[in-house]
Length: 350
Image (cartoon, rainbow, N blue to C red; front, side, top):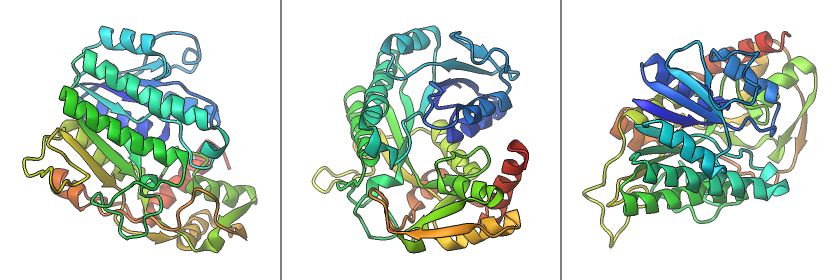
């Protein structure tokens, strides 16, 4: 297939693109390479994917990788004219939208960035799919949509109407907008609610990266809610396996869907929402201990109250994703953390 993957200078998008080209698909990557976090890390992912370091920061429309079936475009989803140019010059079979303004806490400081990227940009790319006849659309949602829900494990049968951050609200809005496009225009839309993803090339604003950095820098980490947190930590390779399977097997209408007793995760339209995680919850302090063991040092800690927008625990029920596409995460925390720490040592030369 010829696949547009947005967010390919990002963490999950980077690995998704590499997996797709390994499987023989042709990938066009798109990313704005914004400065929400260190752009050196974003460019580093692009260099790792075979793009020329001497050219990638120049103002060109399209860049070629050392992989003949991978090219990259630096653009923003908010740029409708650019999206039209891209779609009109390509014959995409599928679009996987992993681009977004990330971060829960940053949404308290800069809400407009989330509306521009996660709402306006999301509608723009769905409109491009509509007008250029792309009917296979998958996109990143988030476990943060569960908000005030405390029933564990999180299930796609639960209601998600009480978000506790603007970031979460934009992700829930994405799911609702996608359903309307599936219903009105026949675009097969699949949303994936990511839980806490970690691994090499991870985001520096995420806890696993922060813990690893602190192990080598000697910096003190702040542990919120006094350490009484649980997260469904999922290794990036397991996440990517699920994404690729969803792209290769787009959803269909649910023939058993009943409008009188509607289930929220499917529809009479070709629409599905899945959790994608490790299907188990890890105590935060246990995860930190695993990082310490892999790095061979004890991390300095400071305990603090819970932050606005945070949730105490996440735990994914992935049974429907397993049933529909055979998704089954297999990477142990010890192996995933070891790989992450080894990458950090190499990339930052510590």
